[in-house]
Amino acid sequence: MNNKFQNFEERVQYLKEKAKEVRTNIIDMIFTAHSGHPGGALSAADIMTALYFDILKIDPNNPRWPDRDRFILSKGHACPVWYSCLAMRGYFPMKELKTLRKFESILQGHPDMRKTPGIDMTTGSLGQGLSLGVGMALEGKLVKKNYHVYVVLGDGEINEGQVWEAAASASKYKLDNLTAIVDKNNLQMDGFTEKVMPMDPIDKKFEAFNWQVMTINGHKMKEILIALEEVKKIKGKPVCIIANTIKGKGVSFMENIRKWHGKAPNQQEYEMAIKEIQGGNNEIN
Amino acid sequence: MKLTKADITTRQAFSERMLEYGAIDKNFVVFEADIGYSTYSHLFGDAYPERYFNMGIAESNTMAAAAGMAADGRTVIACSYGVFISLRAVEAIRTFICYPNLNVKFLSSHGGLTPAVDGVTHQATEDIGIMTTLPNMKVFAPADTESAKKIFDVAIKTTGPVFIRLMRDPLFDIYSKEDTFEIAGSKTIREGKDLTVVTYGDIVFQALEAADELKKDNISIEIIDMYSIKPFDKKNLLNSISKTEALLVAEDHQKRNGLGYELSNFCLKNKPVLFDNLGLNDTFAESGNYYKIIDKYGISKKHIFNKVKELIYKKGGK
Image (cartoon, rainbow over all chains, first blue to last red; front, side, top):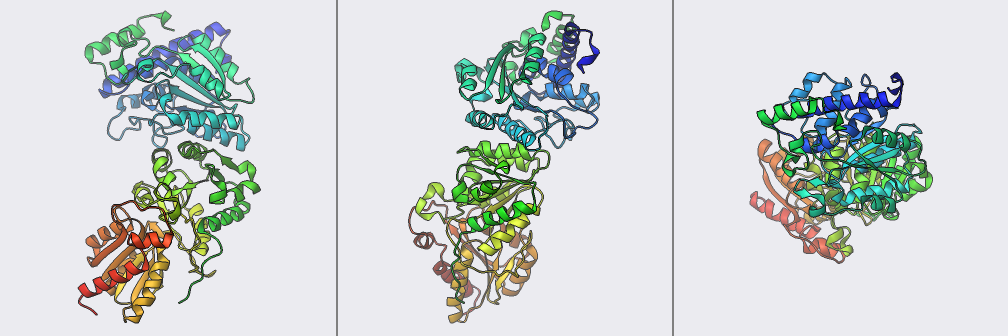
């Protein structure tokens, strides 16, 4: 995908524009559904855009292509960002986005691998995605395929002890084909992570499990791309990218506000949000 | 009829067949959670180290990783004790294995009260209720080593998740090399006309012993080994209770949500007959000798004998 650009700067610019579209779709979907989780979808939007419009080796015409890179959204409630990326890449028609959370929709409230083309694994119950990713990465090693498994986790869900069971097992099997990206937006449902359940230093925890750790700004497209390129060069151990992000990023009145974890905008808020995202704020990234 | 106690346990028999089958089917893999020398999955691991993943004492991670590995169609056998599979790891099993209907088979050892001396923490007395409740899950409970081996083959050839309840201690030999087993199958191991006893696993032997005693009182019971618990053999059950008009379900499990509850529901809808069931009566058991425990908690041959007598009396018989 990145061959069509003259230089790195153009590539970054293209992704920044795509991220705006992704954000617009997120707000549009959640507004239409009258339900959903905008905060954590918006915080992951730049990471997901980089993956789906640049990094991932995938074929939307062949969603179950055996050699494809795998992606797991462990923080499944943020799925509007995933659905948006998948629709924009052509896995299913864009008009399906309007059916989010509706009766008999292919877009379930949380991701479903049997209903949505492009969804590699069902998620939604927090703290499970990294374990699922460990299994997929073990499969890749067993069949000696070069695909890479990416798991996006929330910084709230790492409260779950199973995440650390998974971290240990990924390290045991030296899963250098597995990358965890922690969307560190510092908020979970009941409030700031440092108040609800402090987990810092997250980098030191992953390092203690013998993971390679990188810390980046999860809204700087350049940093995201550089880190994701770097990941593929690291051999013999799994990699964790801690992406510092802002919950609700791109819609000022949603940023860093707890209540926007799982709330749909009303008409007025919707219009304000769309205007802000599309309003030529090129500094968004 | 004098039965002999097997040299080995059903967990060992199942794992020995898993080892043999490893050469027949080179595609399946095995996940273990640090009790490989107890489930005997180490036999497979020693022969096929590249197809064996020991995830340590972390059952939820083990099951979720098994799901990840099975996501694109691979068959995984995941091993642990029944109490941990059915309780600690059940959410990973429900949401990531049953919901997408992935090919993960659960080697579930230490079923029922057979880990008697270990006490309540290791006794799996709610596993049948929990596992049969999960959509897409199939549940088997072999009564001896021969059926354990053959049910391995049935399980691995069955699509989707399958739970196989195995036992800590050796059971008695009931079946021969000629016996065959299938999904939704059952075995009528004793024919009779006065009452039907449906049971499975370790309690099959208790029912056979009770039948011998009842015979002395001129009572003839029909015994069905319902080794396929979900789905169960409706046809054989209906035929039997149509003949006997009385049903007793005896199981090494809580009465609540066990096979007894399932079959009473079935009978009420299809063929109401005189009914009762034996099992743990909304209580935990305790540590101790297995035979003393099943007797104290109402599941032994003595209780089957007494309950059959009571039902026959109610039926207006002898």
